Length: 372
Ligand SMILES: *Cc1c(COP(=O)(O)O)cnc(C)c1O
Image 1: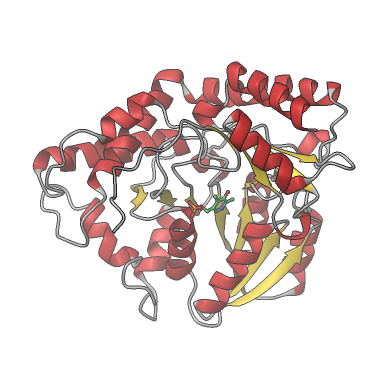
Image 2: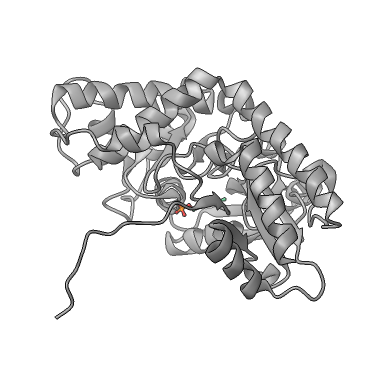
């Protein structure tokens, strides 16, 4: 019989589309003793997480918390709660995650109206406006702030404005955006927004920060039909994250993962949100000039690039899989492969959160120069 031993993961450098490097400080926080999730001390930490998330999102929304599951659950939570049967939802699709939004709308009984843009470009506002003019009684417009599958940055502020002008709510995916590029939920009047912990926040995966405006909250509380997911029904979750003092049991929170998120948010607060945005941009520019020296080209045009996710064309004659295997085996470096229509054509280099630093950039450029 095989004798099993404790698992010892290698020390990798994570420069893919997530997870990003998790700092020792966050890992240490997660190694602290597990306490009860209804322990008053734990509840006060949850309250702090809420306040810190409000800071990260730049919102005063009361309904701001972390869903106890990864980014995809945040997406599902928004659609499950805001879509009622036969609701029309416009989806601005310019990559992989827009496709998943469509799936969500269908599964919750809504009618998706997909507005397509070419992968690698940002969402075209004119097309969204046309769709809004063309279809009456659309209820929601959904878009992806930072398309991790392509590295394109979209403008959720303008999309939200269009949505509101047509009496719709706006749902925004900022799983990769949060803490990496400017975002101001209240100023931009976004109604529902979700993120992830393992991208620019550099906490461990498995939680989804989420926030809802009062308007979204009203819609959820006045639904005609029950939310079709028990676990994600915000009417039930609200009493767990919101009830002051007397919280009722909904599910057991991932206690140690929340310690990690708390610490990661504290690190963000210490650095300052604007400084974090600036660091991501500055490091992107350093990586960019290094890649240009290697004659490597970007997929996305300069104006619309995400600093935290750099999608580059694989140089001619270079083997995709073999090169990435060499990067991981010889250089301990993880970068991302192309997704969907871009599979085999591009690589995705993440500069997210803790991974966004000069040492990583140098290591990445040197390693790439070896394998190509
Ligand atoms: C990573 C990602 C998700 C999904 O997050 P998971 O934590 O993997 O479930 C959703 N949307 C975007 C844009 C992402 O980058």
